[in-house]
Figure 1 (cartoon, one colour):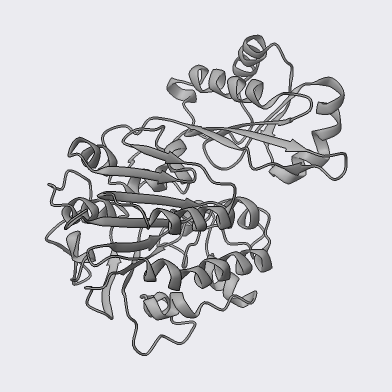
Figure 2: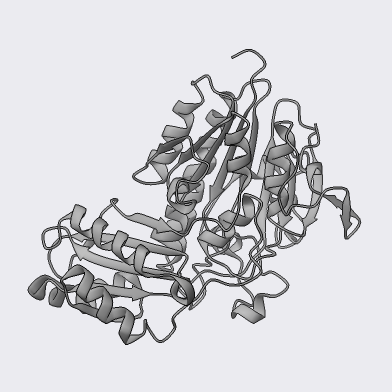
Amino acid sequence: MENSKRLFLIVLDSVGIGEAPDAAQFGDEGSNTVRAAVEAGADLPNLRRLGLFNIDGMDWTEPETSPIGAFGRMREASMGKDTTIGHWEIAGVVSSKPLPTFPEGFPPEIIRNYEKLTGRKVICNQPYSGTQLLMDYGREHVETGALMVYTSADSVFQVAAHEDVVPIEELYHDCELAREMLTGDYAVGRVIARPFVGEYPHYTRTPRRHDYSLQPPRDTMLNYLEKAGFECIGVGTISDIFAGSGITQQIRTQNNTDGIEKTIRLMDNDFEGICFVNLVDFDMVYGHRNDAPGYARALMEFDQALPELMRQMGEDDLLMITADHGCDPSTPSTDHSREYTPMLAWSKKIRSGTNIGTRATFADIGATVLEYFGLENCTDGQKNNHQQGRETGSVLLPI
């Protein structure tokens, strides 16, 4: 496509870069996901070249002498630290109220209604580690057919079931019923299907997880792009996170490796618009399980793929890399952490070594995306404003 523009926005799910100023309010003082991965052995030469370790606050390691990208850190303005709110804010919508959480489990009337809708009993109904859940409730589920419903510190209603006990399509339908049921004060950010297989005590989750998210409260950058005729390709869980709103093409993935490979293949395609990618394994497989060495290996896998991603970039393409929250695998907590997130940008025309500073909101990314495609900024991202002596908004594009 002549003079086409493509933007590849990659979210490294949970790759935070240090505690946010309000981390103590969320119980996350001292969290630093990237530092934990580096201390667990992550060697990241290509992210380093882009400027990851030149970002403000990265004073615990040596900076790159001549970074080739633009770099900065993002502070979340929304009241939360979960995937849904983080992605909505990246796409331009700040959430002033947190989504509901259920630290004591869901109310009895909700569980009774869900049992009536599904025709199955519910067990657990409390905040739980997903892997520990399988050990503690898996056998009872297999023996009785009862659904394992659980939550976490995030706004989620999760339903786990063995694929030989509850067929996958039935599990998906049960989650659709939950999504329809959970409204008003019970409108959690996501209902998540968590299928697993195997024999006790060696149960393992399958890659057929499926998320059923709330619709964003208003239009995001994706809706504005779609209305203007641009392609909005969601890779991984992006379509799930936005409940399909503004997505013109959905590409599901099995894991990070699959997501990276499919993104590289998409670079061979002629399209004009955004390819929005979520790589969830950092969070789902390693962060929540406090597996710092695994987290380090996953980051190195992405780092090693960066040169090929950059080789495939066209003259008018832009690569942006960020995250939606933290999930420090070195802390006692298995939940998300309230952290700054990185912003790395690179194109063949970018001014190398540009420090974009500390941004007041993830929504500056959404504002930048719209400006890149010549559209009016209708997001909560700021333009021509100043914070700590640095502009916010479109200055993410120093080209």
